[in-house]
Image (cartoon, rainbow, N blue to C red; front, side):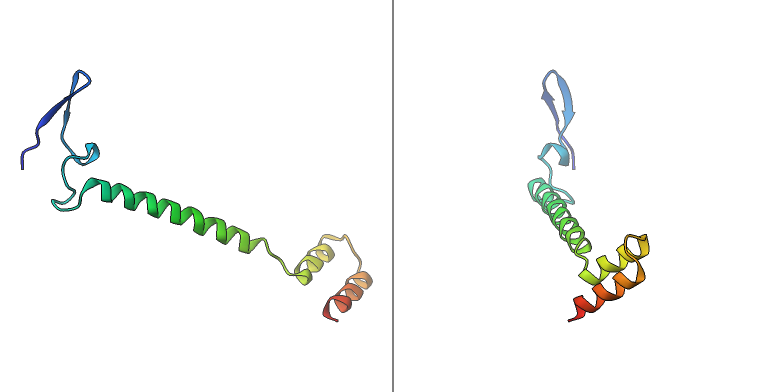
Length: 87
């Protein structure tokens, strides 16, 4: 399979997949390859955004435990708030 040389802007460029002339592997049109790349990238971005939003949603008990561990509240306040949350 010979590739023709195209004159583009005063310099020669080989006809290839990246310039949209020759099918990839002989049967996949280049525009379909680039569409697939774009769809995969957009899908990965949405997946990352959804995953990060799920991680940040802590339950009230988790927040209370973090406050206790960091020393913001003492044991008595922790036990009282824990009781209030469970009611």
